[in-house]
Amino acid sequence: MDRKRTSTRSQSFGEQGLTLLDRLGNWLSKRAISKHLPKAPHPYVLDLGCGYGALLLKNISRSIACTAHAVDLRLDPALSEEFGFKATEGAIPEVLSRLPGESVDLLLLISVLEHLEFPLAVLQECQRVLKPEGKMLINVPTWRGRWFLELAAFKLGLCPAEEIEDHKTYYEISSLWPLLVEARFKPSRLEVKRIKFGLTIFAVAQKSQ
Image (cartoon, rainbow, N blue to C red; front, side, top):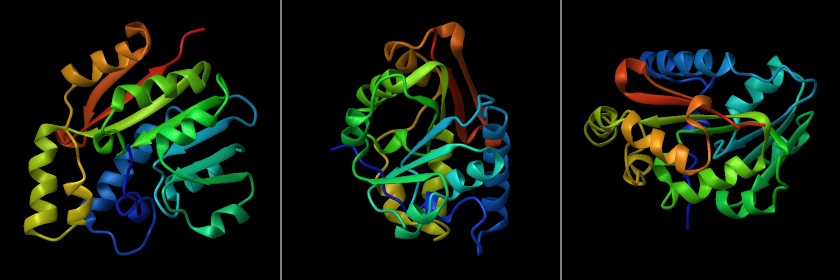
């Protein structure tokens, strides 16, 4: 079953106790994502594998008025009290299969794809649920990032070891790009680049009309 552990994302985007390196990485991620926030009135934003506290999604919902849908295996019960929030506990493939087609304006897969056993099937479902002109934002670690993550987790204890143990693979532009094309995203609507000093890849996939 495709799944994503929740420990890493639950520590991101504003939570106290982060290292200087964590804070720099989070700032770079937020900066990349902020450029692609929907401009349509009251968009539907879906964050898959959002982490227990859905902190990134909270940050977005404070920037734009939107319907914010948080999805993960375990979620903070208090999320249901957030204005405009919808919280769904469950595995990503099962949750996606229940969503109507062409219903999502912005879909987030941040530090998720590397945990999935069947990434292509999930990407195809993501393409299905996106509205025409809707965007999917992806952040994945590279093979260079693998060395850094394993050092941080297994040697230095700077991030949860179980989170890194759950990684199924790592990515390069040459492997992520064709996967997105196979998921029916047109090459002309793809932007795939390295960020965070080459440790991660950030991708923008926009659905065609």
